[in-house]
Amino acid sequence: MDIVYIRELEIQTVIGIYDWEREIRQTVSLDLDMATDIRAAAATEDIDNTLDYKAVSKRLIAFIEESEFLLIETMAERVAEIVLAEFPVPWLRLRVGKPGAVTGARDVGVIIERGLRTL
Image (cartoon, rainbow, N blue to C red):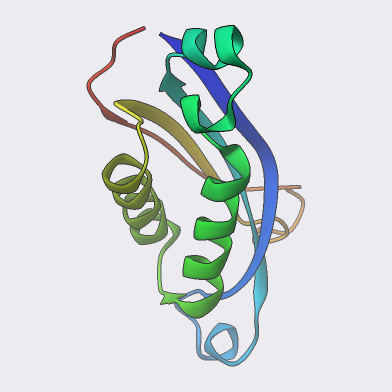
């Protein structure tokens, strides 16, 4: 399989366990590696034959902006479920980061892999 990726997709949302975090929007950052087969798209140069990273990005932006989460772990699971259910992706690796959440660290977060690994 091939990989279509998205790097540093920044989205504003309500996330966190502290009361003050529930009252503001914070930035989360996503990296996605999504397994797919790009050969048909390469042969035809037809966007309908590939994984449309713009469509994936727009779907995730809309979902995350409209949602509220206590934990990034929950956000990561929901994002993975959406991508696997709505797009031709049998496997993905997802990094969800919360920049500035820990003093002294540029970013903290989780990395998950879901689906049938076909690489």
